[in-house]
Image 1 (cartoon, rainbow, N blue to C red):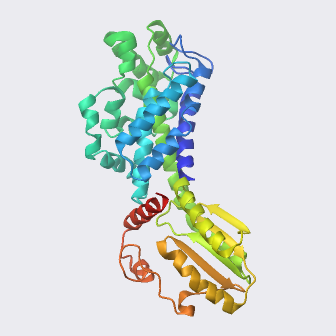
Image 2 (cartoon, helix red, strand yellow):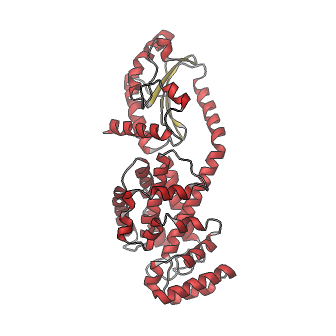
Image 3 (tube, rainbow, N blue to C red):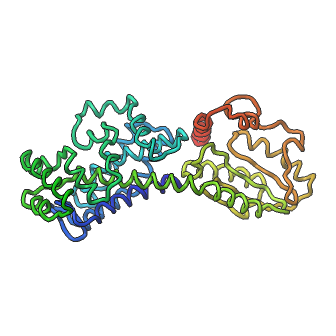
Length: 397
């Protein structure tokens, strides 16, 4: 499911930052850095406590939930983090900034927009123009809020560098309130100078020693590094999907054809506009429609298929062509939501609505024939998806 894929990127990004070694003042697998209250296992527990948060954050964005709802979700997982870490704040910054970033990716996906390296940053900034994010400015343009308000400027700025150099650039360029709070402004400035030297020399010994001596930990820079790793993973995923989508879809179609070739079957499928067809929310709706058809046919599906290309249930059925034509007429009523197809095949040949004299399917948005609207691209995919999600929500109330 797409929300789990995105969550895995967020969790993996958090672990990649944690496992980066050495890092000045930060916890690594071999060092507690400048922290008396943290070690690798506590940091690991903090990351693991957020499993479930990022998938929900993505779903909130995709399904049109408010930013305020996301903040309430974040507070629930903040409590879970503190419970898992015995009261230690390991990832409060990520709950805020990475959580919002994941939420915004969900919103972009809802609009059926393609993400690539040329437009991702602009798409994120565009989403942040919404009035509901104005509250962040009122709360103060500093710390993690400053990075979000900037449109994740620093998170996108250093993607061309390896993780160590990326972290050093962030230490040098970001006003890290965590560094200032722990070491004071004078030491924070010296820390930046040492980061610049480490960028040039590639040697982290001096800056790491200074961080320990002055009790400095660049937690803000670390949070932004996690964001940047997440962004990188999303971009790589989108690029790979674009490159492989056509071949994978053809392969999927071939497998589906083999399942119906020369067979008499009823095939239930979910019709979701856009590329994202595998989500928990969609599965819940599909399962409810499956139960309706299962009850109607008094028959269990031989196979259910949940794939990134859609959901299907295949019912082998032993009936004559005439009986299947009659069945097709009855299933038209079950299709009335407009989001499911019930295709019936007699010995591999489809029985269409036209074959039985039933009216053709109508468009989700207008009263024209769905086929005509599809061929002419009469509606944006995002408009169709909005309607589909609204129908599913109404049916799940």
